[in-house]
Length: 142
Image (cartoon, rainbow, N blue to C red; front, side):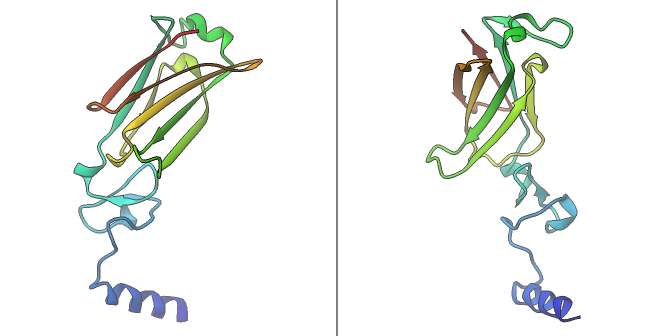
């Protein structure tokens, strides 16, 4: 009972609103009109659009049916950061032959992406780019 009472007092002191940058696990945890982003914070939809990162390997498209040069890559890491480096999300392992990694909703401050490929001996290749629209395409060359 005390938890609910202290929660009610906290929400009332915010004027009945949860701050836009509040942590969340789903859209239901955010205020009306806000969405829960892929980094678990509430945001206005316009400030956290989808972002698809696609890649080729040595200039060739890859897929589950045609993995191409992905056969020598054990896994990838997809890392997105803010320009100042204050925010950093790192996803590993990512399967190379998928050819893409998609964020449903990611705040615009995450504007840099780095793709790192690892083989049996360690880091084999890396490439990066800036966010430019809702799709960024990278080419891993090794």
